[in-house]
Length: 275
Image 1 (tube, rainbow, N blue to C red):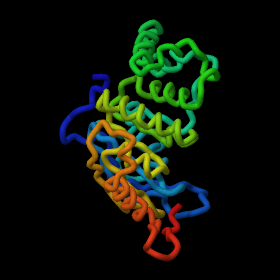
Image 2 (image 1 turned 90 degrees about the vertical axis):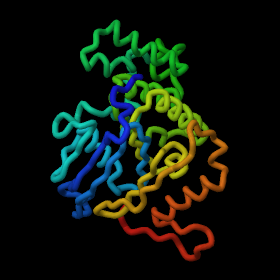
Image 3 (image 1 turned 30 degrees about the vertical axis):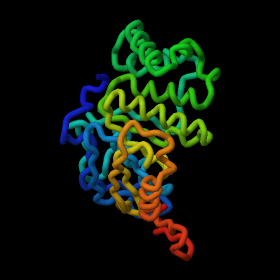
């Protein structure tokens, strides 16, 4: 198993407790988060959906240790304070691959930064690339890859250190619909193979319901959770699931929690001004 913290029944991997976060000088003086609490169990795939500006990326940045809360507690795999920075692996929206490095060296980079020697880091990176069908591209440069391939490499770079929690910020947001669907299936396979804890931020309701065990809907300013939805579909999930009535029902619950009126309810959709 790649992830040492992957399976511990009943344990919590990610936790916010009474967190307050505001940004000085922002156009809206209200805090983004005010007393927000949440937790994600170890081994769970949790998606957070919400409008722009609702605090989704702020939550990821807190768990990644990139910002510290003004008040409240952030805990990642039992670590708090400055130790949070090294606990989770974070994948931003842009792949940020280094163009002068080969694919294998891009994937090996976090291992090198963790003190692993170059030959061993490359060996581990090559093994990951082979495992997930990318071995033939190990010596390629990022500019020779398609957008979807670059995102695969970026994910494996995030995956390589074997940290117990993966934080994914709109990883497929810039891709076309067909490539996005393909990578969603690829991501599902990769995560299931390792039993990792995943927190995914996305604007895509279909993506959230298809991939996650649990969907949290974030709204307002200060942000609140308007819905905490368990997704009961068995894994592995197939693409035709998205055409079924149960999938449509869960998607409808998420859209309703986002303040979007569904067909037949009458009147224009209404939000809460929390974007």
